[in-house]
Amino acid sequence: MSDFASPYWFTEQCDKTGSAFSLRVKNKIVEKQSQFQKIEIYQTTDFGYLMVLDGCTMVSSRENFFYHEMMSHPALFTHPKPQNVVVIGGGDCGTLKEVLKHTSVEAATQIDIDELVTDMAKRYFPELCESNQDPRAQIIFGDGIKFMHDALPESLDIIIVDSTDPVGPSEGLYDYAFYQSCLNALKPDGILVQQSESPILHQKLIKEMREAMLEVGFSNLQTIIFPQPIYPSGLWSCTLAKKQGDFGEFRHKDAAEMSNNCEYYSPVVHQAAMRLPNFLKKSL
Amino acid sequence: MSDFASPYWFTEQCDKTGSAFSLRVKNKIVEKQSQFQKIEIYQTTDFGYLMVLDGCTMVSSRENFFYHEMMSHPALFTHPKPQNVVVIGGGDCGTLKEVLKHTSVEAATQIDIDELVTDMAKRYFPELCESNQDPRAQIIFGDGIKFMHDALPESLDIIIVDSTDPVGPSEGLYDYAFYQSCLNALKPDGILVQQSESPILHQKLIKEMREAMLEVGFSNLQTIIFPQPIYPSGLWSCTLAKKQGDFGEFRHKDAAEMSNNCEYYSPVVHQAAMRLPNFLKKSL
Image (tube, rainbow over all chains, first blue to last red; front, side, top):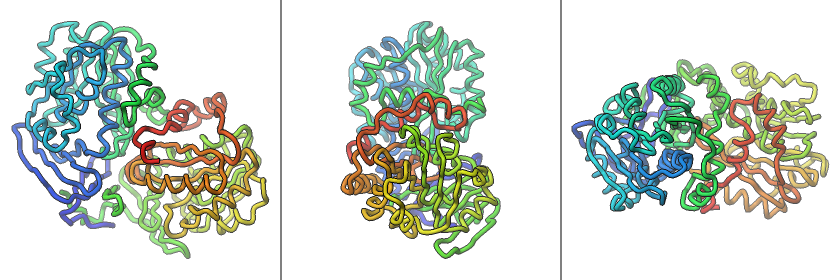
């Protein structure tokens, strides 16, 4: 039984799931309250910098690649030719960077509500922001729900919802009205990607999200799973929703080429991530 | 910054890697010092029972399947016809149970040094012990290093080293002399499996283990990775070492059949687990 009273550990205690994860910190560098959330930056002893939003670990220098690669490449390689991509949330710019690795992409627009998150990312996670100056990138600070509500019908190939947990500023990104807006804004072969929490701890949320996506009219769903060491349970997921028709095969050859430029993603990882393991199948 | 002074959380604090993981507990049920280690059993709020050895989380009711399935099935399906299998350590009997799912297996022998671990498993993890009465199973309490040293040459198809971390009672399971004994005891197409810690946190250990295995004469190595929510970083590994020749293809058809009877394992998971991601390749 350890005592964490020491100021040298940051702990995310997840009361709903009875688990907690901690990183040892050298220094707390930033604590700011934005209009939307509390933002903290820690310098850890072993994981580089750590960004925390409203008490939840968001991104560390050491292992964010799992999340950013898996939020983007499976969807983009499932689409035959993704050209117009929108990232809702994603203020650390890591998902945007992965999206821009795709040469087919002509426009990648990131809409995060909180400019301070991106300011902090530029300062403490510059490696995630290195494609922000790409001429195809547009970075907007505003309301993703409104942006998607106002988007032109059938204008987008991929929408990636790279949001925090479905409480606080992100709550409205997990409901029918928002999914309906996304459906309208996607072209017929378009794909919505939503981060869908832990496949071990949050099976009810995944089930409800999938039901809502089908109810608004998405034709096919694919939940994929991947490691995420600093999130509860160490295993995370996102859910892909296809507007019309089946997903079909993903572009294996292009994926294999991309994998040389990734830390985790590869075609075989993609294939395995798509397989719902029995422990999850039972509850969905 | 949370304060963990409350007695209702068990925390494994990993000072070497600057991370910690905690589960909330309802009750501490057992604390016993065996001849070899301190054994604790907790009843957690969300993960069932938890066994802790010398302060390190070993197994919880909720998620041990990842580890036990991945320590056994990839090796057994890589071997053309595993008949004679030895598990060194594995006192919770979960790996033994997975091994005995293979109908080709004629004898499965488990040698753990600490009988108290198995006594506790029978009581608090009876689901892991449900094959202990299988007529093909033999459960021995004794020194795995000596057992392997004395084993008949070329008598075994698979050796699974399901041990605790390479400190304390398991230290001798990670050295040249032990690997040499294993090599001698394996038939020419035999495979050694050693749990090899976190691919994120313990890359140096994996590298040194692999070098030692090659040095004693194993011809081919395959490190595989899999989720393990209650171990540091949530991602774990084991390393397969082939006595002679290449691994070749694993038995996909048999693996597909087995996957109906597993929570996580499947042929595509097996395939992906074998792929060394770039972040690990660089350091090995």
